[in-house]
Length: 115
Image (cartoon, rainbow, N blue to C red):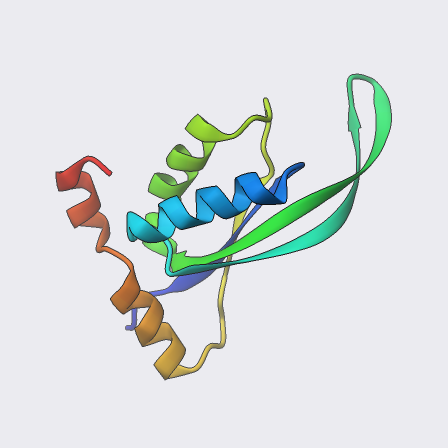
């Protein structure tokens, strides 16, 4: 069975902050790439409905790296409760899956290096 990859999504109110986070995660080989897009978020917070522009980063990585990426994002994120979730990619071209795997570290290597 081939190793699964996923799209890990994170929102924030600052696209530049997300781009800096993306560069860090790519350099650390925790994610292969990121797409950063503007979004409009509607949600309840502090007993009131909020409606704000935000940005969303879609990171492509190994599903097995989710916990490590989530920990790295959570320690740096300015929100108390950042939206952070992964969607396994059920259908993806072999060449792209292999590229993502080649660009990211193996989870056991990440544990040994303390990333």
